[in-house]
Length: 237
Ligand SMILES: Cc1cc2nc3c(=O)[nH]c(=O)nc-3n(C[C@H](O)[C@H](O)[C@H](O)COP(=O)(O)OP(=O)(O)OC[C@H]3O[C@@H](n4cnc5c(N)ncnc54)[C@H](O)[C@@H]3O)c2cc1C
Image (cartoon, rainbow, N blue to C red; front, top):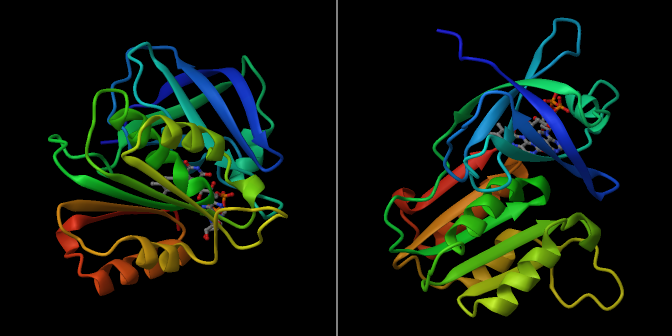
């Protein structure tokens, strides 16, 4: 059976940097319950055989009022589906379906967590981290968030603030090309992971982004001794 499509109206657009933006949508039929880490299918009226259907993760925990936030980067090809999203304006409408996916927090929150993401792979992980710290949570949480350059760590300031507020949230920004005065990690997220995490004991690992991030990060986890059941992954390609 085809999934039920729902209409969403663009309420607000927030550029996070020249290549990444957030859109806040209001579903015409509320509520829209979902779990942090899930994604929606977006039906884009583009391409030779529209719609082009693309997945976008929900960037903020469910509010219960039918509002959702998506966050995405501009494509690197002329016919990229995301260019359509970039050209939307407040009041425009989109068709979506969902929520979908099992890249979510466990029902019982009795683990330490390791989150590893690159660039817009951060979106579902940001949602889960905001969810975890929306109520008292005392277990250790490590975030390794990588990008080409510091400007592409679009939620970096938010994570710095969280790390300042919660001693059990440890944030490791990681870039390929550091700017002058950069104080974070340089190099691959997988190498940072191996320097930071010594044991799989009591910890669940979540990886999200393109294959180029997920595969080496998963191999690093295996070298540390993480069994498959302690690794969750969401791949964008
Ligand atoms: C479960 C899931 C959740 C996703 N959530 C998000 C999200 O929250 N934000 C987001 O920006 N994208 C997300 N994506 C990727 C998104 O669905 C599209 O693939 C992406 O926007 C590129 O679409 P496109 O039509 O421009 O290019 P496509 O023709 O779909 O893809 C061309 C190539 O672009 C690469 N690609 C895929 N995603 C990206 C990306 N984000 N940046 C650069 N290259 C990419 C792949 O190698 C792919 O083969 C998600 C994908 C999946 C499967």
